[in-house]
Image 1 (cartoon, rainbow, N blue to C red):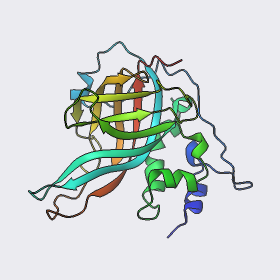
Image 2 (cartoon, rainbow, N blue to C red; image 1 turned 30 degrees about the vertical axis):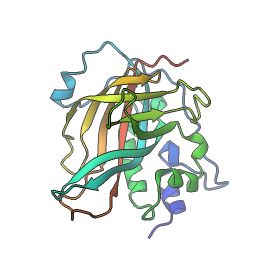
Image 3 (cartoon, rainbow, N blue to C red; image 1 turned 90 degrees about the vertical axis):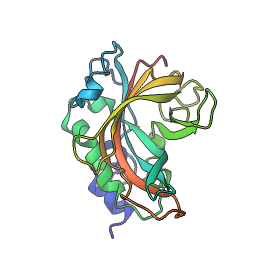
Image 4 (tube, rainbow, N blue to C red; image 1 turned 135 degrees about the vertical axis):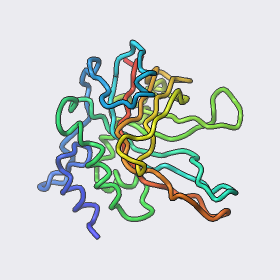
Length: 237
């Protein structure tokens, strides 16, 4: 199997995993590029109908992480959350690299050693300092026994230390990925709490789907995925 180091070198066209062959140092350090005129291409019809908001994109990130599932009593997997590392690709909007970022990310990520977490992957790639933020699930801030997705930039390279640099969101609509059933849904979400975005879109998904069935009582599983996330209407400065 290829080593992580070999994978990083092979994927050097992708900014967040590019490591110089000469000194092992990352060659990319985040972005502060204006993407307010960017459009979200290829939206399935059901999501396009929900995209009439006048909000503009503030940041665009590529994620590598896991979709997490538990086995139900009926023998089907149920999603219980996700964990991912986020990297700002705003400065590459309009370029081939932007279009292909999720594909290159999943090619590197899916061959990482079994059991490796997204955080461990970026640490071994020596690009932790270029992380834009993290994605995970938290208890619903409005109460109840549900959880909501959060995208948190507080410890990232752009908004480090800003306590308002996060968004917790709730799903407005979803649609099957146009690339096939092996890829998780595209999703449109609205803000519940936080200043990082008023709306979030998950697009260009790659992998992340669980097996069709499971044995009740079996352990939870993590399925690797990549995607783009568009963050609209941020009030962060």
